[in-house]
Picture 1 (cartoon, rainbow, N blue to C red):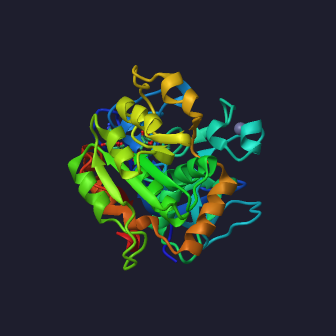
Picture 2: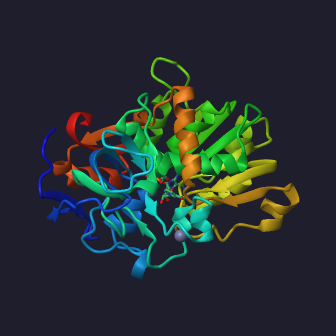
Length: 367
Ligand SMILES: NC(=O)c1ccc[n+]([C@@H]2O[C@H](COP(=O)([O-])OP(=O)(O)OC[C@H]3O[C@@H](n4cnc5c(N)ncnc54)[C@H](O)[C@@H]3O)[C@@H](O)[C@H]2O)c1
Ligand SMILES: [Zn+2]
Ligand SMILES: [Zn+2]
């Protein structure tokens, strides 16, 4: 086995649209902790919005300066602290990206994302070191086993993007009865399309503003060589979107809508293009609802239900991993660009530009 060095170079985000590097000590895992050799670490839209461009959120909720970035890490355990209960050296693991206190009600439900402890809630890549370095210290309780059938780049995306989407889809329920509208075709919207297709949605319509992303979405398939397209139609964002969705659904609208853009106009489209009795889930974060939203006209009189959904819980993440294997689908198929850690500035800049699908930083053989 290669010896673990004493220090490593990690990447952090100063908050001005750049990436910086620093030498970090490689920590020794304490009780209940593991040292992971990072294999893949993907970039989420939230990294761009909340950390890369500027540091949004202050105090314990905010990005702690010079914390190693990356909240979608996946890798192999190379060292264990004392008292391990389930995982061991050599295990391939996904990290649930927020470490919680384990004791509050939210943690007991598995939603460490909303842990209420100021002292113990720490997100990887945010308040504690994340995946943009060759090694990562994690707590055993935050780990999800990565099955052999999935690659490290598949697993990295389960961390935030796919887990978040799976949760949102479970809230609204997706089946072969449904035409689904997805607004915002960044990595999260694309993950929504892949999972909706796997869950049997009979029609999937996407709306996106960036031309490169529209073209990318049109090319995607459920699994390689399947010929099963993710989208039946992809529309450029615009003022006629509701009418266009109605035209594609016999004048009825979509039974289910997944909002992944956070844009006020797209949020209004999401609500208005839902069919009577339809269910809508808001996943895109930040910003406001369109001021033109009229609850009685747009929702109440059509008996629609609106959900908000924040990340997922750890048992559902485990369930998702099992389903990905059963369905034989690979989140890594949505990755359009892979970079080594030295090229992280290019990777973040590309993700910021929107001229890409999912962007991954990869280590060892994953590049
Ligand atoms: N709720 C959660 O738990 C959770 C978890 C992860 C990410 N997020 C959020 O989900 C969103 C999507 O994440 P991502 O990684 O795909 O980010 P992203 O920024 O790459 O994707 C957003 C997409 O929306 C598109 N868009 C902008 N205006 C639009 C419009 N009017 N109509 C249609 N599309 C439009 C953008 O061009 C972009 O492609 C982000 O807001 C992110 O912060 C939420
Ligand atoms: Zn994220
Ligand atoms: Zn907690």
